[in-house]
Each structure stands twice: as structure tokens, then as C-alpha cells.
Image: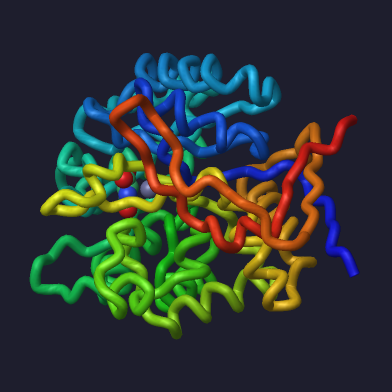
Amino acid sequence: VEVRLSIPAVDDWHVHVRDGAMLRAVAPFTARWCRTAMVMPNLRPPIDSWQSARAYREEIISVTQSVNPDFSPRIAVYLSPALELEDLRAGFAAGDIAAVKFYPAGATTNSDQGMGSLQSYLPLLEEMASIGVRLLVHCESTDPEVDIFDREARFLDDELLAVRQELPDLDITVEHLSTAAGLDFVRSHPRTHGTVTPHHLRSDRNDLLASGMQPDLFCKPVLNSARDRRALLDAVCEGEPRVSFGTDSAPHSMAAKRAETIAAGVFNAPFALEVVAELLHQEGALDALGGFVARNGWAAYGMDPPPFDLELVRHDRAERPRTVDVDEHTSVVVYGVEPARHWTVSRIPQ
Ligand code: DOR
Ligand code: ZN
């Protein structure tokens, strides 16, 4: 029997679309199936003001208009000492700033621009709670003594827990959940939401390391154990309302992914939806797809249903491109080609 289903347009709650030629090459993939996407601010220099957020939002719209005029990106600004409360307040009220993102200094790509612990921003976080701005957190301990596979759990225990308890009215998203411990944290605290990536649902550290290091699977937080992956996939299949789809699509050139120090990030925007659809199909849980990629986020953000729906059809394997070209010298490897060979996604005409 043919598998065919329709779901609401997707919301991607965590994506890197970069700038310049990379932006033009990658953002249209996100815009095709999304009504909105939460765009991360880790550019150089970072997006950390109302003005830079507005300009970035307009630039993204200008390069995605032709693929989907209904796509309306949201911008998260970078939490650093440069972020000013009055500017944040005005930018949020104007709709140009949607959330604030905290990166522990040095945890990942372009994250050396933050400064200080999460705790050090308590006064600003308190204001955010009162105006209703959500805090998005990259949860990884940067203590060099902490084992890389324990870094998410340690950050939650050592840093986020105190802030969570101090500010019960602050909306918090634990980004790119990679462990059962992260999922437990989300489930056990009110006003706490989590995003989950396609690659943390489908791949684990054996895939990353056991048959030789796979640079295209290297990301932060690092792919963790099979048990952690299973816990995340079970939560999605069971329809856990506290988690939603955040691709963390993070393109780097092939050269950067094969450099002596490998850039962290998985580029999954072209096939993110197909990867999740195939996983849920294999689990017999396709009925959970619309909740995960769309409805669960609506509650967290108080949103109405989107203006268009998607149709997904499963079929025999077809060819899919393995790379996306940015310019004549630069291309990016795409995640999820194999599962994507079974799916075709299209927009349902209104
Ligand atoms: O793997 C990652 N890549 N994790 C992040 O948090 C940032 C991202 C990037 O911007 O490349
Ligand atoms: Zn990210």
C-alpha cells in the first residue's frame, strides 16, 4: 500500500542560514516547507541588536521570497554584554527579535563572542521573563575536565538548573537535545521546551566514530549513545508535546569539514523532513509527525495553524543530490540522502 499523508507546514525552531553566498544557497531549502524558522545569530559579527536582527530578517526574506512568499523567519539575538535591554524590548515589540540565544563561550561555531556564565545574565533574564522573551540555550559544559559525552547533562545540572529555579516565569528552550538526561530535564520543569534535530534522532556516536571518523556527522552537542538516541526517538514517536523539530541545519563548506580541525555542524535542511518521516515510518509512528514538526511548537509560541499544508508520499528509491553548490569553489555535503530517497514532499495547493 502506498503511504501518503498530509501535515501542516513545518516550523523549524533552530536553524543556521549563515550570510552572503551561503545564505542564498541554503535558506531556500528551509523556506520551501516552513511557515517560520528560528534563525540563529552566530554570524561574525553576531546578530545582537534590534537593527542587525531587522536587517538580517529582511535579507533572509529577500532570498526566500521566490520559493515561498509565506515564509516568515524569526531571529534570535546573541546573548552577550553588547545586548541592551531597551533595544531588546523595542526589537521584540516590533517583531524583529523573537528570542535570545545563549552560547557558553567557546562551545561551538562562532561562540567565542559571548562572555560570562548564564548566571551572570540573571538581571537581563529576569526582564526577559517579564516581557515574555524566550531564552534558547545551547546546553554544553565548557569545563575541559568534563567528558564530551557528559557535557549536556553537566551544563543542565551545574548551570541551567539554578536559572530555571530562580526564574520560574522565564520560557526556556533546551536546544538540540542529545541525551536522555536533557529530555528528563525538559519533562521535569514547567515552561521548559526542547528541540530535537533529525541527526540526533537518526545517528549516534557509533555512526560518527566506529567505522572511521565521519566529519559530516560531527556537530555540537556531539552525537551521543544509542540509548540516548533511542530515548529521543521514543519521545517523538510517543507524541511528547514538550519537544519540537529544530533541525540545527548548520552548513560548512566541504573544505571546512575536512580541515585539520573539523567544523561542527550537520547540513540537513534539504532533507530534514524526509529523514524524520522515514524514521517515524520505520517505527510505525507516522501519526506523530505533524505534532513533532508543527503542532507542538504552536503551543509553546502561542501560534495559529499555518496558511498551507504539505503532502508527503513514500515510494521506491529515487536519486537525490548529495551536495549543494554555494559557488564554483564551494559545496556542502547534505545529510540524510538515503532516507530521503523514499520520500517526495510537496505543498498542497490552496
Ligand atoms: O554543530 C553545531 N554547529 N552546533 C552549533 O551549536 C553551531 C553550529 C554552527 O553554527 O555551525
Ligand atoms: Zn545550532
